[in-house]
Length: 113
Image 1 (cartoon, rainbow, N blue to C red):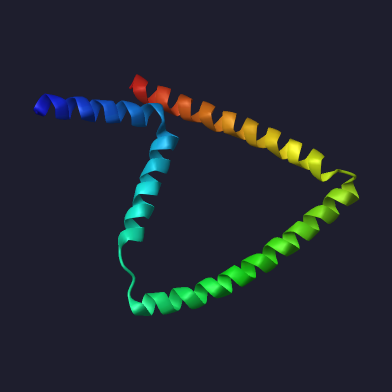
Image 2 (cartoon, rainbow, N blue to C red):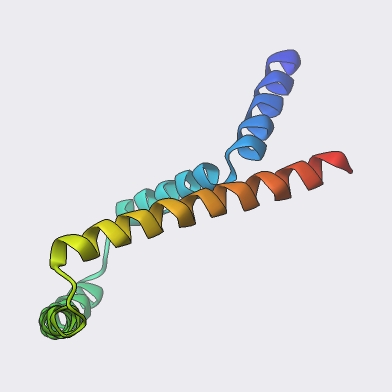
């Protein structure tokens, strides 16, 4: 049994070292799931309901204002929405590659010591 435990610990450690962002995301998801299982009190429900309604309405207003400002800004710059989408996709792809490269460099540095 101890041998299996040791193998499981080693495997878990290796997975975390090889995929730190995925491990952190997994931990966050597990934490959120556990938090969702804890029942809310009646007073929490009342407060959250009112707060949620207000937040939802303000978010809709903010999103609408941002969309309108974004469209206007693109039009003023002579950029179509489709061109902007392509540029954003490319930026996200390059940023993702940079994050993975930084993560790999950090992992490699830690494993050398």
